[in-house]
Image (tube, rainbow, N blue to C red; front, side, top):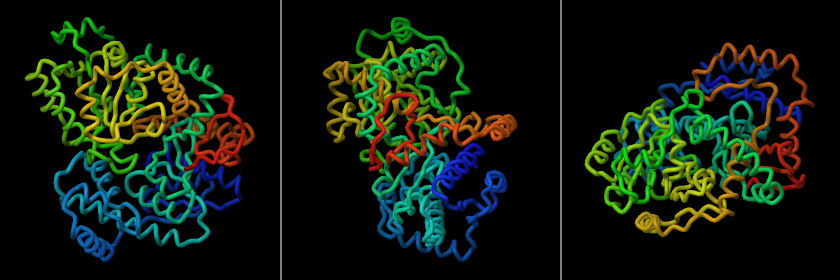
Length: 491
């Protein structure tokens, strides 16, 4: 429903149409009139409509839902429900959290069952759609939630390649071709391409990283979520000595708990291994630090907390423990989080970006659940809950990060957030949030299309190279020296 998403999808589809000589079919909700107009303006006129299910279809889905729920006793069991050999339970719970704003359930309720029926209905609709043997590719902006996730899974089951956009105005395409990739989100880069970048471009990447990092520090945008980047105001920094005085703390080591967005990115990397959702993890870690009095603890709220509010949060619990326990404090909202780079001794998150951003700044950070950086050999993920607890007890025994890990973290960040940015001269700059200026967005797009040329379009050129060299992502070959060879790193 985001205009920028629709335009990007239409553009990617048209580029693939030009490369492969295929026709384009747009799958869209029947009442999405604005989206239909956008695709028609991009010369896409063949539509398959997702219609609201009638009463008979809904009754059938309800009966099937209760049949699937017959032996389900917990939310964890619910997330394992399968239909047509796809993970509908996980899709339904993810959608429930996202669209209701309720970040956690202890028991299955009627609303969750409703989302399960929706997942079943969409699955049946996509099964019917994908009977068309001529469908070879699927272009999606999103691969999570409903209705995107059932389509994503079913395409991969049918061996239909999925092209999923990564980025906003400047972007890359992640290509999927196997069902076992369904738990790898769009931003998970391959070890193979990372090794190529690090081996041949380390000095260049480090130099570019330092320049970008310095700009982020000066602007106060380090660690700020892309969804609220345009809402971020420059705040003053607070030094470690000032903070210790403010909190009346001694010189114990300081661990920072980085809170998560409770209603987003719960299952982008598949089912969670230790905590069923972000809410469960947060409750666990807050209860845990109460007992860990050998350290001082700072709780850092997620940057999007105020803009994407969940109906259930930890504000009262945090207020209670920070009042009751002197060694736990909430990081003051009126100071820049850049300050934490000079304050934090250990960063702790479930699966947040801090676990690669802070090692890049020579600060140890531990995590336990899968994320977009899991699998990178220089970052250590804890494979057992008990091992994680032991490490939490003995944070002071964590060795300082070696220089190689620091450098690899920096190169990884540059690769992930810059090297996959390709300028598409058919899409004007816009924000991922829906409150962007739509009028100026379309005015700028009209200007762009008047002077558009395939041969001069960076994204089109890099997409061709991606397909030629069988690359997982659209890499910007203009930014670094990457050998032009077959990588075959989709899996």
